[in-house]
Length: 152
Image (cartoon, rainbow, N blue to C red):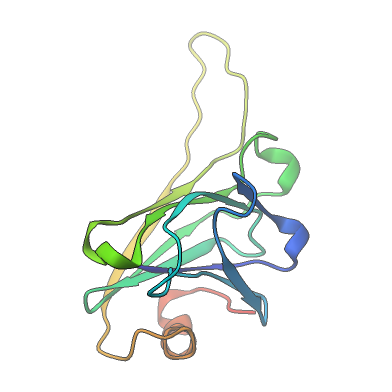
């Protein structure tokens, strides 16, 4: 699974454990890199402060776009990112890996009886192009207006 998050700068990304994952950041879009044959397995979490309220993932002929309300960094618990990507991937067993896509709402303390609400909009679209960053980003750009997302 290849995942994408709009991110403005490297300072908006943290990886735990440090160096466990690899990503590409260009044109305001971060992509979580998959291990290539011969690479060591990867297991870790990427914490991101997105620049816009969406993320996307591509796998098995489908594109998943998750939309959410973008929050300032100060609204998210300091140990988290508004978007977190957990990757457990090994190029020798690509079908057995895992990618978790996680979105955090603002961190608030609630008194007994109080409530808060957060929501996400998930959209799945058919995707029949190549499994490359360039092709995925072109697909997202072509569908941005239909989805109502802003692509940097």
